[in-house]
Image (cartoon, rainbow, N blue to C red; front, side, top):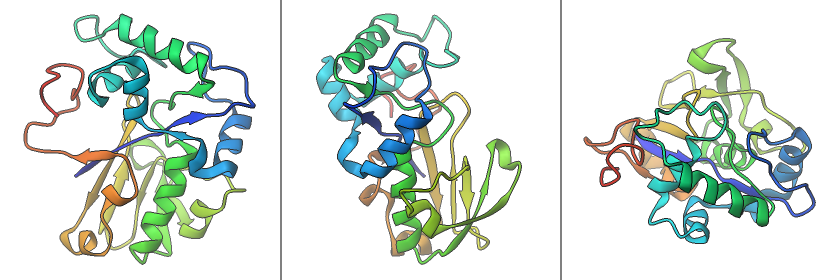
Amino acid sequence: MFIALNPFLRLSGHPPWQTGDWTPESAARAAKEQGPSCGVSWQEIADLCGLPSVRHVNRALRLTGSKQISSEFACPEDTEKMLSVCASHSVHPPDEGCSSPLLELSMGAFARDLGLECLIGAGHFGVCQSPLHTKDLLNKQQDCDWVELWPEDLSLFCTIYTDYHYYLICQTSKSLQKARPENYFEGFYAGEETSDFWGVGNLAIF
């Protein structure tokens, strides 16, 4: 299973991001039209904030949006620093529980190279399923309403939990031979020690 990190967005033509705000639709559309050139990696955010790793970025993000993290695991200082850096650089953090416009484009390229012309798109927990064509994911002029994705042959499954800022990408061994997620997304492969609290609880564990 691969952990795919939702990119931040640098959009100089849009007002600085404010604490608690979701990315405006106009900004999301502009990001998809611009493509990868407006993307900001988690590693770049960690470097700008002086944080040791992307694990700390994950923890900082967990105090944005719905803030579904207990005080035991939260780090308000890192969150405040991250939000300040984002505001000063006109950077929009990823929204929780959904895909970044740039991750959507990367997902389209990933599915295309896997030879998948059509996927099933759904909301959280697989609700409201409908066909989703790979070409639509790659269309910079089109918004795609999806949270979870998979093909009919179940060779791939992509999902994000409601309060998190990263996708879980699961593949069969045959699918991995066609295309590997690390060539399309920033992230890492989960190991036996990885849990939903990577970067939140024990920062030494991915």
